[in-house]
Structures are given as structure tokens and as C-alpha cells.
Length: 117
Image (tube, rainbow, N blue to C red; front, top):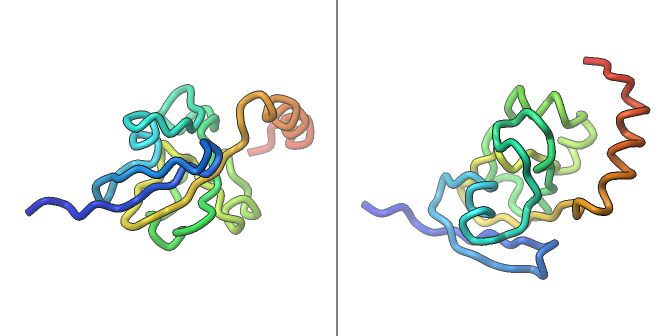
């Protein structure tokens, strides 16, 4: 029995809409369909693929421990997830900070967090 297909909308990439099988990983869909979500490691270690589920957060799986290392409770409450760790069971719309705009923000965040666990 084939999986039913769901839609993923990459808001930051001009609202590009693609289809993916149920229980797809957001980052893998982005890579396969040129969705544009930034990434480096793909293993939950670097935090580069942080994105915001603007619609369809209820269609994402449980937050992983690896995500909690990069995302605050506020981030999670506001729909932020790490694309490489997130699997979806229904339609979602996702946005992210383009890498160029993120560098200053990330540097400020590093200074503020002070490397606490």
C-alpha cells in the first residue's frame, strides 16, 4: 500500500510547494526537492537547519533531545524545529533565516548563551 502524499511549502524559498510521502524528514524533502533549507551536518549536531513550522506543527513528530540542545523552550513553543530531526505526517509550511542574515544573529546568540548546557 503506497504512502499517501502530503505537501510541504518552503515559505522562504518563494513559497515553493512540493509533495512528499507521509513520515518524511523535512531536511531530506528539502534536499531532494531543492527546498532550500540551510544545513551542514544533517545529524542534529550543528543547528544550521533550524526552521519554523508556520503551519502544520501538529503534523510533526515529538521533539528530540538533540533539538533541545539548539532550541529554547520559547523556540519550541513558537514552532521552531531542526529540519534534520523532524518527521512530518501531514501538510506543513516551513520558513527559516537565510544563512547570510543569520550570521550576526547567531554570533549575538552565542555571546548571550555563554555556552550553558
